[in-house]
Length: 235
Ligand SMILES: N[C@@H](CCC(=O)N[C@@H](CS)C(=O)NCC(=O)O)C(=O)O
Image (cartoon, rainbow, N blue to C red; front, top):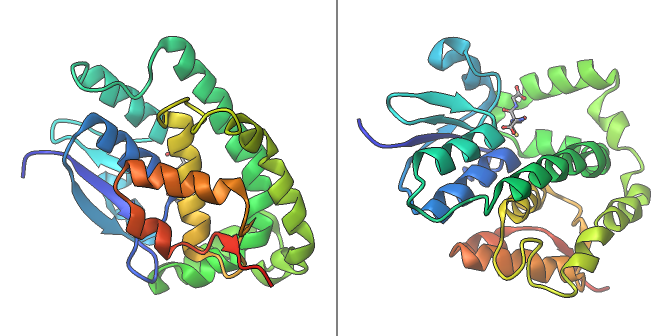
């Protein structure tokens, strides 16, 4: 079938939860490109395209298949130059490289020891044994041990987002008046956390809750926002 197919990771409730997939869903929306969604479990990935791609998102343009979210975003701008740009200029694209590393090396380091067991429990039942085995082998500890005492680590996670809070104090999005790819990456991460979290990551009155609501509204995703467990209710 012609057109674009996007391979996404489905979780137990049937929704798409991979933060990396969401970046590309936002990017495709920015480009105004329609696509067919193919919901996968993590354990399906090696069965696709001869096992060429170790991670999702995977995108199939018919004549070409790719993975790696940043490479896909680059390709979308190169292949569809007449549609709205994902990256406003080369300098912005280069700074996104920094932002992606900050998310992976700083923010995810706070997120995973709090949410790995939730990610396991919220994943597709087909993925749970693989998720546990692969993550426990990597960290050398049981998921339950990794997340033990996680409430005490929540303040560090919340503080790690201070650069974003300070940035959006003067503008609606990191990208300015409209979300750019940095916002798409961060919104994707909040969708992931908010989908699987049994412990809300943010205080209910955190400006970041409003930021996520505003960002998802730009993409017509008000219902997704309402489904997320992001902000702690006041007690
Ligand atoms: N650098 C990749 C990272 C993608 C990634 O890690 N995806 C996860 C899903 S959230 C995955 O497919 N993991 C495969 C696995 O756990 O076996 C990108 O930006 O696309």
